[in-house]
Amino acid sequence: MLLYHFLNAEYGLLNIRHRRLKIARISELNDPFEFLGVATKSASLRRRYQQVKDGLNDYMGLVCFSGNWNNPVQWGHYADRHRGLCLGFEVTAQTHKVTYAAERLLPRPSTMKSEGPAAETHVTEILTTKFEHWSYEDEYRLFPQLQDQDPSGHYFLEFDDNVALREVIVGHRSAIGRDDIAQSLGPLARKVTTYKARLAFRSFDVARQKNDRLWS
Image (cartoon, rainbow, N blue to C red):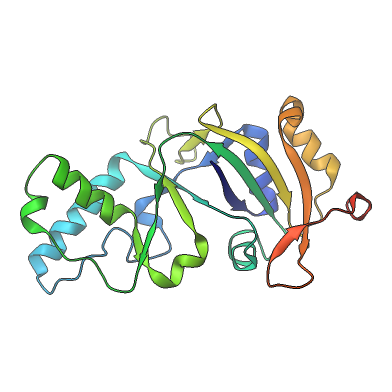
């Protein structure tokens, strides 16, 4: 499955050069409802779900992808207002598609106290449910374990056969040139398709620029 990850120019080129993606920490996500999507007035239940979130944050993170690269909102929000990059990956590792909902989840306190398939299903539901207004992201998630923290305190997912770089799409406002991409890719270039994006002529989409003369 081809999945896409948006970045600004600096980190996009850096990630290509280092063959890796930064793993996001659960405690630092920009949606405060992340992993706390249950609806309950019970303070003790809210504390219980917060404890689950805190526990997950200690040993795992997430890498977020989109099922498409054509949405201008994602370019605006996550690729520095169309001045960054979108990296396309062939992902064979286990991903979880996000479900978008108008209402918050029902709590399952008895399930949370147990172990086994029912508890795992509920935790997965918590991990992959977001408010419906986020649906433009068409999001898929990987949940890698946190290992080998670098000196800056960050964790990274290395490119490999399970998360293989296949496309580099340059934003239509980006100053990144062909040589910048080629130098960052190095020997990986023969396996990766690179192209410039443009605004579609008849819809609110981002499209591929097929006129190679317009990207130097």
